[in-house]
Length: 145
Image 1 (cartoon, one colour):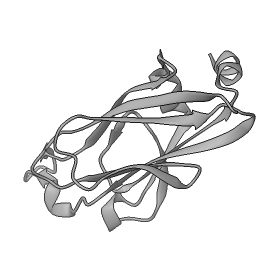
Image 2: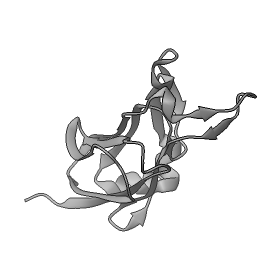
Image 3: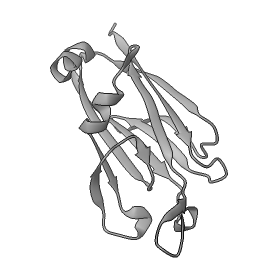
Image 4: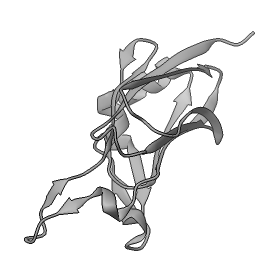
């Protein structure tokens, strides 16, 4: 029998009218999927804590250019984003570790070439945030604090 650790995070939208989809993949297997994030959702699942490298992916889909309103000066006046907060493993908030260790791959919703950006907690474009970590989790945590 292998031990597990509990992963949790919250996902909320800045505009519940716009059907932004959100999916979480653990090692390329879907562990959570919501086709239209309307309220704050809590994502929870277990991860085997045996010796391994894990790849966690947050995927946003469904955003179009019409979902971003821009005024005559080029300023964004309203937008639809997904905000990922309270990233917790085994009751330890690792949000401050996840953001700098993640990459955000997107193409500005099809308007530009694919880029790899830093991740600051908000997803404003269709794309994928990738976070890699190793288990046993507590060993990874000690090495990365």
